[in-house]
Length: 165
Image 1: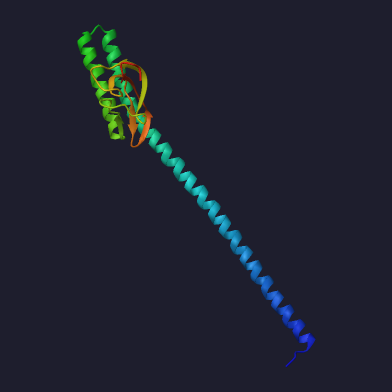
Image 2 (image 1 turned 180 degrees about the horizontal axis):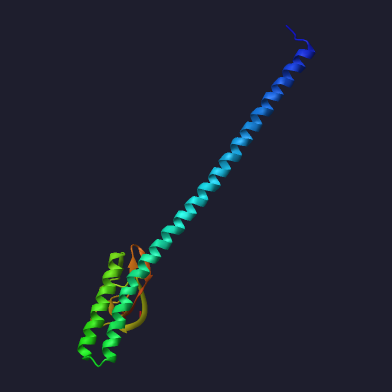
C-alpha cells in the first residue's frame, strides 16, 4: 500500500510539471484577455470620438445656414433695404435657429408661475402685493434645457413679500 518514495517523488514531480503547464496556460490566457480588453477599450474610445466629431460637424453645418441668413440680412441693410424687411429677415433667421435647436432637443425653460431653482436664476426681486411671493414676475433672459440638463438657467425677477420675508 505504501508507495516507494521514488515513485511518490516521481508522481509529485509529474504533478508539479502538470501544474506548471496549467499555470503557464492560464497566464497566457490572461495576457490574451488583457490584450483583447485593451483593444476593445481603444475601439470604443475611437468609435465614441468619431460619433462626437460627427455630431459636432452636423451641428456646425446647421449653424452655417444661420450665419448665411445673417450675412444676407447685413448685405441687404448695406444695400439700403427697408428696415422692416431687414427685421423680417432677422425674425426668419431667429425662427430658423429656434427650429434647429428644437430638432436637437433644446427647449426654452418656462418662466410663468412659481420660481424653481432647478430651472431659474433669480437676479432681481420685486415686492409683490398683487402676486404671491415666489412668483416669477418677469423673464430677464431666456433659459434653455436639453432633456433634463440645464444649458442656461432662465434669469428671472421674482416677487417677494412686502415686508421682505
